Image 1 (cartoon, one colour):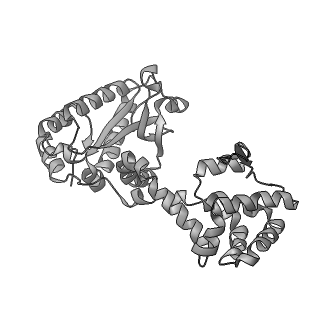
Image 2 (cartoon, one colour):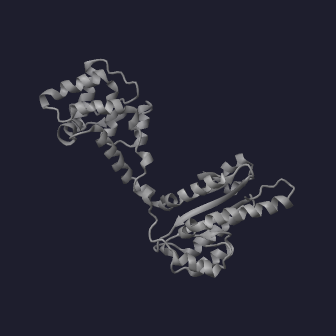
Image 3 (cartoon, rainbow, N blue to C red):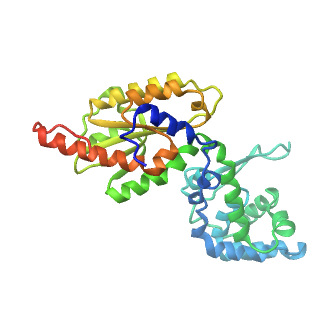
Length: 330
């Protein structure tokens, strides 16, 4: 189906006939790129299995033997109790230490533990410190009564669980995640750079004259041909039927398009969701005033490529007629 050559009323119908009921793709539920970090400790992970189901009488001796031979096993402890990735990295780099408060009157107010790489546990006293930590954190009970087969499987399960808990942070970006593979494919096909969540001032390094009015604004996606100094900004948003104001949405992106025009950057709005079911008037306004307005169906079924090709033809005419070295579109 050809989209760019259709009348605005026809495009409104195509748009409203193909509105998404959800913005969640497969990559919303688990971001598998976050399931990492453990691969640097595979030897230690498998060595920890010696503690699984260990009898009370043998547990402490096995722990001391394990840590004395492989001190880096203590670096796995933050994985075992589900410490966030950025906190683990700060510990490993030695930038932070893990501080635990104590409420007992006859104890210090807090204990401090180091988990920096290359940790030195050369004496029984230092190993005893981490054994007490292991017990107090509940990890001894974990190994004696909960883990049955594999430390590796447990750690992967913890990481998946932590990532699924991060869905609340991906909720606002779910539609961006759903659209991103389509932008990646078109950029591969046409050998374009794809900039994701970058400020417009990033384009200055490619020769664009970016005003201070837009320099610090972030773009969802920018398709860039750095050799031809050409770019188009795609903003991607999903709106449910509660709280969204279509008129304000369309007007704000008309302003965005005008702001980018002076820098030679084209603009497209990809939007979807139930908000638009009863907003045909605002969609008509959008199709009249925005160069490119589309939803996920249109993006997926050819309009993205039409936009890239259309701007490519437009660029040929511009470069043929302009001799003043201005930045032009694709």
